[in-house]
Each structure stands twice: as structure tokens, then as C-alpha cells.
Length: 128
Image (tube, rainbow, N blue to C red):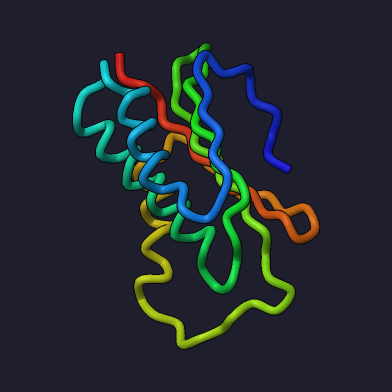
């Protein structure tokens, strides 16, 4: 499972198939006092994690958004259920784009697997 992070100052948890619209709205509300470019980067990472959670037959189970203290940062965590047999198809150059986004935009990130559950999280240091 995901690493043990400090308690969140603000947390939102989503479950179900179509969490993206509500998660985007909540993320923007959580970051209402933060500069637009940071919010755009955070939204892009959120979308990437949700896309990854539904790729190759996986199912998004849980999405958590949190603003953590000490130092102040945003944490996005997505847990998915991996399929018994992944759906495979032709590989495309876009497949590596998500990892490049994580490497470029996130302050820290990781992915952990526990049986059929896989969790990927990203953190971004809040400006200021």
C-alpha cells in the first residue's frame, strides 16, 4: 500500500467509475488561493493518474486528494484494481508520456502494488 504520509490538513476521497469531474472541481476548490499555473499542473497530474488507473483493463477504486502540512504540499493518490489478465494492445509512444509528466511536474511520486491493488501517488510542493 502507499507510504504512510502525515495527516492531511484537508482531504477529499472519491470512489466509483466516473470520479474525474468531481475530483477536478474539488482540486480547484482546494487550491483556490494558489496560482493558476500550479493548479494547471496539479490538474494535469490528476488526469494522468486517472487515465492510468483505467488503462489495460484496470478499474479505479479510490482517489484521494490531500493538502499536507510540513512542508505544505498537495498529494494525489489513486488506487486501482489490476485485471487478472491485462488487456494488451499495440504499444504507442504516448504510453511513456505519463511517466515524463510525473518526473517533470511532481516533487515526489511512487507506485506500490499489494496483490491486485496498485496505488500511485504524486506530491507537489505548494508555492509560497
